[in-house]
Length: 329
Image 1 (cartoon, rainbow, N blue to C red):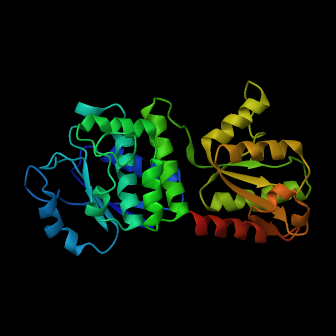
Image 2: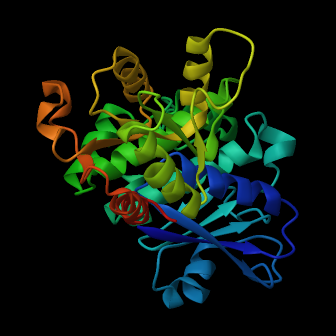
Image 3: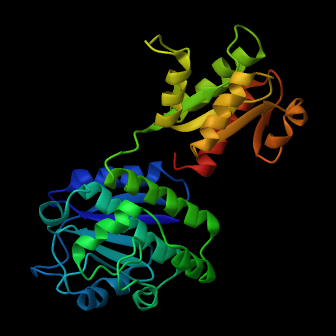
């Protein structure tokens, strides 16, 4: 699903909006958010009236769109959503409610609008789901506005609301993407932000010199990532103090992608792969096509990108296609 974020050119917090969009696109790959700049903020009114907004703006929207405004709502809400459009106010967040940061708040509110879009919810339908008393769920109503921080700290959709969303037809993969976004919000809200490099891939493989493994990296994997503007990182790229295992763990935690060449029997490869899977990283498995049937049984249910031995150009093109098909490059 593609979602447009409308930001007005005179918005004083535009840098935080851009940062929030980068985070949203980096922690999951089901939704794609793009920013569009418009000249002026909706109207000359000091406050936003939701009904008037729907009449004036909503009728002409034909794609999923979220407006970010610095003006408050006349009903004192944080945001409003409908089937294809939403508007979020950032009025007074930093003055009255932070911490968490404005960026984390934006990520949280955009995630909520995204759920409404994906489940095809009107605001009336959404209101039937809300908790009048704050429970630490995305669907808390928050009569007392600071209660929104409970939901951000919990970073979850409660089981009851999750079940309702599934009955509305939302896909499990979409819910998983939303939950990854909420996991980021929670980490920010509790003061333990997730540190990651949004365009970095860590390579897990048996290091060698001038053999099939080495050539696959030099002439297939690395050139493909370079063409996609994804930074390629291996544990032996640079010498740093500390144990190698700690270096590997930190590199996997901070990267967005992990590429694992799994067609050689190497305990380190499978240890690092297990760590990446445990951290819920986006993992791409690679194997020579003649060796894929020899992979451990636990990996045979995982999709694996294969290539003909020695055909590094084919490997490069298949990696590029994988990232273009599954991510927004």
